Length: 190
Image 1: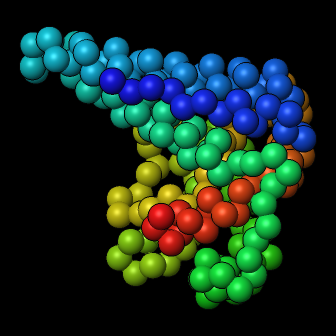
Image 2: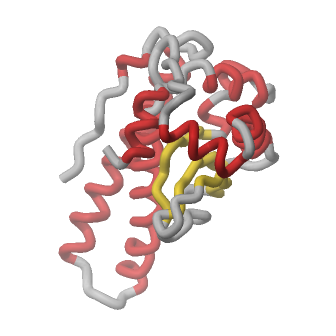
Image 3: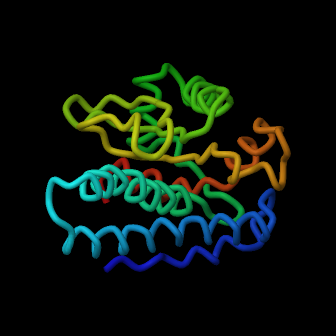
């Protein structure tokens, strides 16, 4: 049984109305609830039936929706964090992108693309390389063998109520509330 995490610590975040945050928390709680429902149904349904097959397919959508939201809210903090320019994380960013600024531009440009989904900074677990990628939907676009370091939700529910179609303004606001300690901890494997 999964329990929804409480992210109300984010209420009062500059650039994010409490209304949009509460709506977003409720959406996330729906993923958690659906994971529990699907898990229960899968215990009692006949294997190989169309209903079983569809529940198995749906599980990935709900699971990734739950976890991506947890990672997204988890890498946000009121007031934002401070990046340690001498950290191993920043050194790796510079190694893989040329500079922190080039990486930031690439991450933001990925988020500004048309469509719905997620922007993810990930690390190849085999060679350590960092890359920004687009995750279309929750259950498609994940890269096998990659660790998620930073997540930004770019589904409309994350910004339209506050920003309308001004996605770039949302991205700027998101950038200002990244908890760099969390990002660096994820990179370090903590």
